Length: 260
Image (cartoon, rainbow, N blue to C red; front, side, top):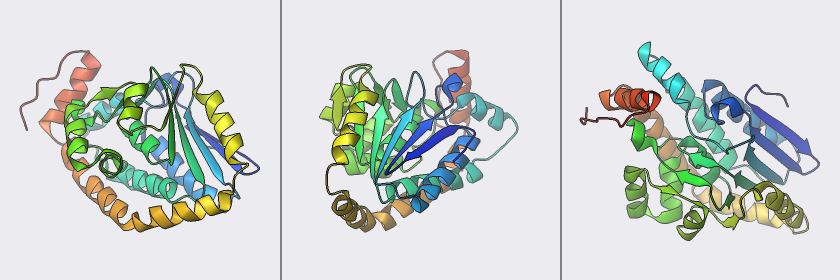
């Protein structure tokens, strides 16, 4: 399977999907949203039992492409189409009949963290930076970020972490249950490969049935979160706070928000 912004390799029962925009820290743009949706949906036709999700070169994903957001804001572009593809991608990943493993090094921020948390396991390096930091540019989490944060840490802590844009290293992320396995720096992909090899020696058919039962029981709830995020995020993109946030980011200064 060939895509513009990601790589997808299927070898026997294992699929490896790599976010592949290293020149932009593997940030999400519209094409990546399309590619992820089409890739995860296509994997349903493959006989895979394990999916590894990783980032090319220095990071897992630094979130959304803010320079593209600024360009879109300047021409009045909306995000409805992108949100449609994000909804498809996250839903397909969450319900994929395979054990899914996010392999995080560098950073998993914003949508990058939502994507990682959609997986069954999150393996993270000690110095990785995890943050649901949409608030810094006046946005709300998308990609099911609200749902996954609530599932992992509970509603009260999810709110606080989202509002604060809290940044955690790998050790802290495991302590807060936002990641599952912490490894030495530079070792995430190697450990993940070992983990996958171990999983292949287990009764994966039974594990996948358990996943489909448990995730399936939450499917309607995830649908509601995704639908609400898709309805709210275009409104957030039109706020003065968001425009200030992305301009401040590009200009490398502190934003001045006014609640508008």
